[in-house]
Length: 213
Image 1 (tube, helix red, strand yellow):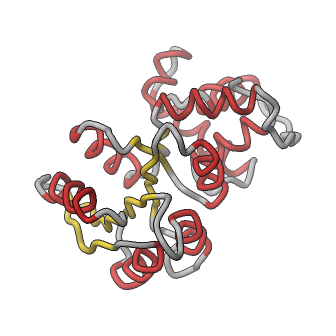
Image 2 (cartoon, rainbow, N blue to C red):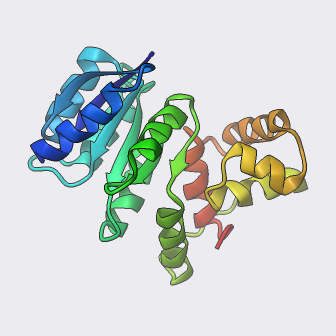
């Protein structure tokens, strides 16, 4: 059972997402919150698998709440799935740096929302293709803090580029004509080599190193 906290300052939106997720047999909505402080408190109280977090909320926003959740030893195992819009590019990058594990657009289809929560709960990052493309555009325009990566094998480099493009492990396996388990192994090695918290952090590092753009 995937346990979820839904945080959004708009009651109608919040209840809608909670209803969609709660209707799934494998998902339980354990709490709702109307701001970042409430999301943080719920994460500490319930230790959910995923917090579905709106970025822009009154008081403590979603980015600050995400940073507190991912940096605390108590809640570091909680994954944060951020709700965003096309107009929130700056917030997307900031939320990645704060430790968010994925992003979905607020107008996403119900089935895609359920899939996003499931993917993030399983430990993978979820970057909506639309969001990934916009991030690549921003980095291509110079909004990149250049970093130098440690030595990588050719295959690790290929996998990292694919991760930076927002591809899933299955999509990477198809692209590189290798097995799913092989891709998982390479991603695991990359997380260790690059000292990345999760897949979303790999995307950030790859973009900052000039890959994928």
